[in-house]
Image (cartoon, rainbow, N blue to C red):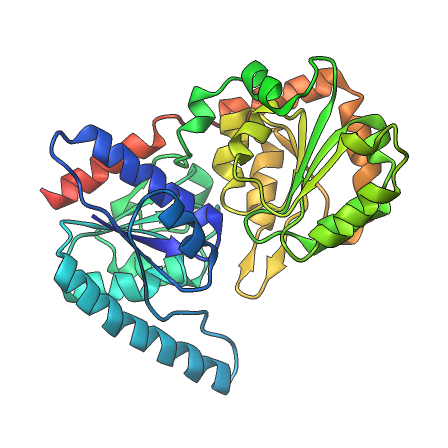
Length: 358
């Protein structure tokens, strides 16, 4: 099977989870190939998971004549590269999760007449998934809220596939590994696989957070030096309560251990927060061609999250401390998050893959 998607962890990890589920399902060895874009997070994540990675050209088709021409040129080149990659690899099925790389791979799969299954991880599709939905043999998606944007006749709601560690690790063990005492409150701040400078700045401006709880702060590479400077300025008695890191390889462990998360509202939040049973303050990003607000509103409407717009990010510290001080509400939010979890999501997608590959 060929996998594609990427640009963010929210598109990469579902593909990896489905690939592992397919390997477990079939008795004979399953050869996997991941096709992504060089310089993006998938180039780091995929080889670390032990899967072969190949890169093709790709990128967003931007507004304007020059941006549009450049984007279409990259996509055309990527489609040619993907065509020859897939022709050599000869996959029985291609699984794409959206993102820039998935478009040329989807086009190549269609040209080679290979079955193409596309997964929409977000509530609302971006341009890549909208295009791929016209090429796909079958569509799969996270929620009923997302299915209304997709072709009804070939769409199945399956949930969001997450890494196995979300199901195998319990909260007590996660806290023990991280050195968090049973009575300590743990706030996890992370901006997704690409980081979030605005969230980081709000945490930097609220240095008092570490005086009230343990803070694990995943800053991204660019803001790590600022976080280390903040840690050095904190009073010695609370300094160890602030734990910044550019990247956290054991993020599922931290999510299982935490009492509350502060994060963007990328695709991964729809699966990982429910799987961890983790309440969240969501600060949705609004980017060219993609608005995370529908994801945030979906979790908030279920009672699992509180949404702060970018304009209200100055309220972040007060909101976090108020929630951490309200055990009843945190417990209610955690239960609401767990109700959204779909442990069978990866296997449900494998069912679709085997059906179209038969």
